[in-house]
Length: 504
Ligand SMILES: [Cu+2]
Image (cartoon, rainbow, N blue to C red; front, side, top):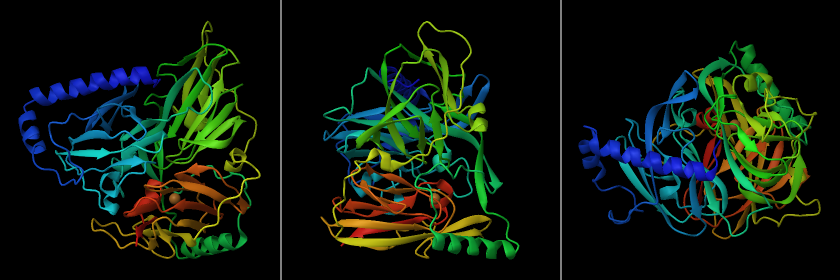
């Protein structure tokens, strides 16, 4: 379980331990000498100012079940990384120590920060050097449930990027909490022990509206047919051996202990590198109050949650069905391999029960006000996403308007140009059958059209774009600097599914 009080204690404890280790280990002297060198950051404050948080990127053993101990690069030798609490609008200083041999990037996902601290080398953020340190200073915003993660392109390295354990929750305290609740519980969903396979078995049929666009489908299917006809195999996908919530496989972590009548606010993060996750709790409904940390216009009770890679959902569950339950993924295989957590009512004992929820389709539109209409944009950028099957040494290559983002260290020229203060619409067309979790850095966007259905009022930073579907999101250019746009599926972003926007 990952309640605030516990995690803060754990954070203070591990920070203390890490500092001690640094002082007394034989490596400490060398490491500190390196740390004292001037940082390349423009966001440096005087060294004597104490940091609000200190994070150590470190490869560590992580026990995901008794005697099942994996190796992963983590924040502070724990998974998930410590919960970082900020106050909206109040400046924060974070010292990040990289105790690995690889330069790292720590991305503040969902926050409106500047490009030099955002944590994406594509935008020009300096790396946290191998065996080095970087101090970042920024003003956390907007309020709500955000997170931090590594923003390294992993390519074929299944220990790097978000395949690693570098994922941790952020909560920026708002002035008003959405909804009445008794306590909050943070859940981070994450798979470990990845392997490659030829083709995958990802759920595709849970999104609503669900009708594919005929012409996008024809384009995608004929490209795929042509590739297979040439004798190409299917491009690589990633699968996992173990599945965890808050770093523990189902049945091996502390249960969530509840009392009848309690209203528990869950902050759920899909910390996966590649997977879409679902979650059900037998006999209970989730009242969705926020998406990606932003309150929704029309909080709604649903039996099942679906989260694309890096999406967050905040939902209140009224504990009104006593028992011992498995809150878990709807996929039997994934749940049986660990994707679940036990919810235990006070005074109840026995084996945790799973009951599959009734068939249900996930729709963002349900959480918007039906009558709402979005403001007109000043300009629309059309983006067509396409897959070239197995084109990159067996990996699928991805393109945006025919261009594949190169895997190089140098800054790539921006493809889209913004004027400060203007409102932009991204019209996205998916010619593949994959669902893409589309992410925009340093800005939030408003959903304005989902698969042909207009909508307004839902603010997010990741959108699941359905297979062979079209959707639109709008954003206001209010945070100058290079801005990365990409699919958050690690295999897709690493193999071309990225582009840059800049300000004129
Ligand atoms: Cu994608």
